[in-house]
Image (cartoon, rainbow, N blue to C red; front, top):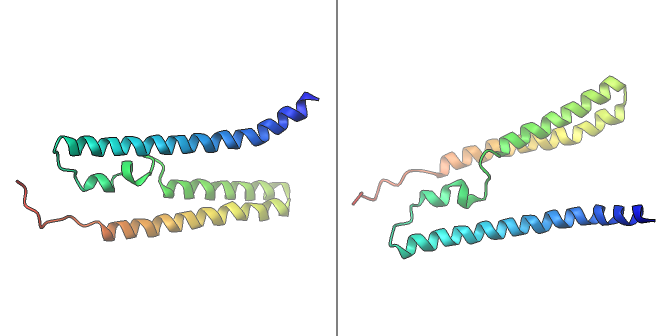
Length: 130
């Protein structure tokens, strides 16, 4: 009698806890970013423009690039396809195409994003150091 109840609680509870945890993490991160900007403004220090281009303010986690994600998902798709090919299961080979194509799309997006960011970020040479 208790097993189905706990099963339902865990099946629906774990995603809810994960979502709430992610929202709390994003809220804390935004608050810390705002506090950093406020401290810089209160002390009269200039806010460097590079700070807004850094990973801290772009929401990217250090070491977690889109290129890495694309490679991991593509490798998972290839692994599922090879496993299906070894077992002779064409349905597994076909199922492996889904993560493979998603991984290739992530790789393409990482390449396009990398080219776009290189083209848009140029050093500002109009200001003189004081």
